[in-house]
Image 1 (spheres, rainbow, N blue to C red):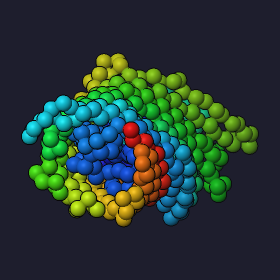
Image 2: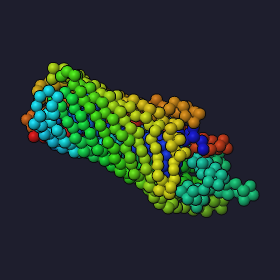
Image 3: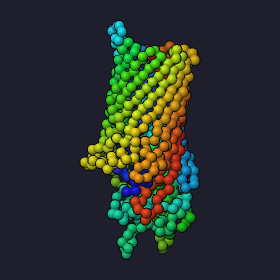
Image 4: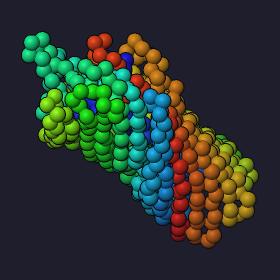
Length: 498
């Protein structure tokens, strides 16, 4: 297959490509970016060495030991996702608004009876959830006077005896895929007319990746902290897309327009373990180290497609077709990469602090396994190893306490692209397309109650094709669309200490 175009064009368009599992899934479900409380979110989630916040437990469970009292907190957020697309010289913008929950947590702090240097001071217990990823977005890509078609991909597959009831069968039943009995080849009317049609792709995504955490941490003389946690990850992802090609200029003899729709629903449950330590050599300095095992997911995909067409024949009669595929229901496993996080923080006279995390993730070692039909995913795992690379994510945050009750915060996060610069013997357009976040917020504390508010804005760009490229040069390759994504969120954390 034409992997050079496949690799750079499928990051956002899996259901148009296939119902199969591949490197797109591996990255989508491995590239988690924790979203928890407003305090942590306002400080760039740089909490690996700070602790004292339930988001920190998802990074370094030793941070649970920083708590001096028990706490209950919850964090709703309101977000807007904006996707700007540019394709064949045309620009489109689409927005999506959602109200969600980022975090609900309980921490129990229990004093130990130990005494003396190096003794156990507190044993803390934590239970709650943090959001790891939000999939919600809506995007529309539209262009005019195209010089290629999705029907080229369908036609080529048919001529190579690669016939699927999710693609080629639908096109055949919709009278879009035609057969030349003399030449004994399949063909399509759009290519035969020389193209020139408009193309529009709409994509709607829903769902989230949430982690439910059970954690325990030990505080030794307020100098050394050890922690461990069990994470149960709950995954739901839904993607619906519709690709439409239309003969706006009445140039194509038979095809007036057609649409191809696809629907993917993925459910998954996984588990992981984390170990961490925080050391305070002096009161002003905190150093943290944590390791997270891979998350071991059991996954289920449900996939279906449909096609509608409007055809005008040579005798001027017209026909509309509408066909749907069977529902594919498939089980498999996914093992995400392990993570290692090195953290440091500097506290200034209890008035301010600055904190940073370096998080190492090697996306090339993610694995698909145990297909429901016995499939071993050897080829797909080889693709994952070829196209992805290790990255070091960076998070930076600061806080300044104006009064005993009021604090200001700011943060920055950078998540490098997981794509190698070159894979499958070609340059990858999505290499170097980093994901970045800027954030700011404030906190107010009075007695046993606290309120934190944060604003976060993330941005990233990517290239993608609306449909897969043909395997040979017999058909033109599709053009790339550029998508600029911006996500703005306001987080509110309400908490009670007791």
